[in-house]
Length: 410
Ligand SMILES: [Ca+2]
Ligand SMILES: [Ca+2]
Image 1 (cartoon, rainbow, N blue to C red):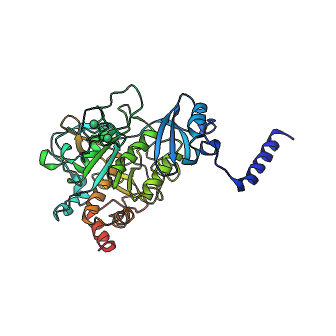
Image 2 (image 1 turned 180 degrees about the vertical axis):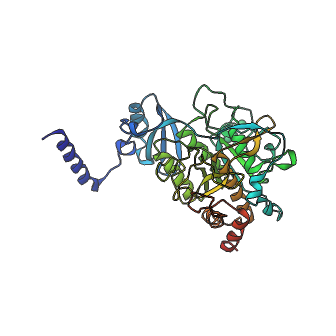
Image 3 (image 1 turned 60 degrees about the vertical axis):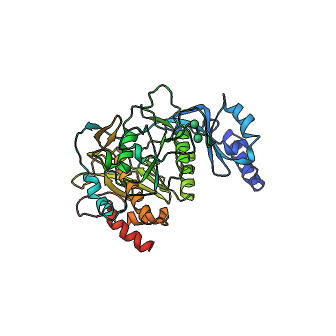
């Protein structure tokens, strides 16, 4: 009997014994041997382990080796553990370029008709949005008033005053374990935040939902790297603080089991997750990238449209997996040190949709994430010849979305 036949026989015996299946360290940590590594982008961190618990929570644990971790952590807690994988570092894809600005320009907010909701007194009041991203400058005068502060935490004393597991998370939290980078110079998270919520009383930018509240949850370092475990912890943190919407203006994640499970968990909790489609000009139905292509039930994946209301040439697309387009080129928003700047990217289009969703949720607070998604998808503007290669064929229109939502939630 050759090796292949022996392996087949072993496989059959294993399948037969599956009737009396008992959870084992091997079954909850199938990637331990590294056999999946060849198929994975990103570099496995041999000393960090993403643990998904049976109660739906995620933690990231450390140990000097996988063998030690299995023996000392997994085996004793086997009944409580659902799944384990190595944490991985990956290069997070973000936005394309920055140019400075010194004036006001809110063409995107106008094109999606956010101003018509502002005129009705709808500004995103009482809705919290998690910005799971790079650094957010919470001292920016247009951002500071829009941060959902954690009043139970005393900032800067080195103590986790509210006992939520995160020290000094007064303005938000930072889950950045990629080493060797300055964590506070990236513009990306501050720009995304301003598109959603910038306060027009203190500067030139008016966010789409200028009275919504932001929960900054940083996992991307300034060199554009992050880990899967940190991304999951950041999303989980934002939800624990009351976020109803998660903005995920990033992509390029590798080996996706834990991240996919985390997205399913967000769906199960009724959280709307808005994801950038990516900027490679590719069709993600054919070449999927994650988390854009997860397509969980409460997810909206967003392509970028231009000032002339065409799909940008660099935006990713997909008639199945990308849902809508939104303004994402030449977008003016806040950047650190009291600045404003233009940026391009589906990273900018996603927060247009997050802001639109915050407006809709504040207008109809009992609407579910699924209803808000439905309202946004059923109300897009479709213009002949504009080639929005997305599921709905169109670009969002929050005025029409409110009309749809009002029918769904009278
Ligand atoms: Ca805390
Ligand atoms: Ca504290």
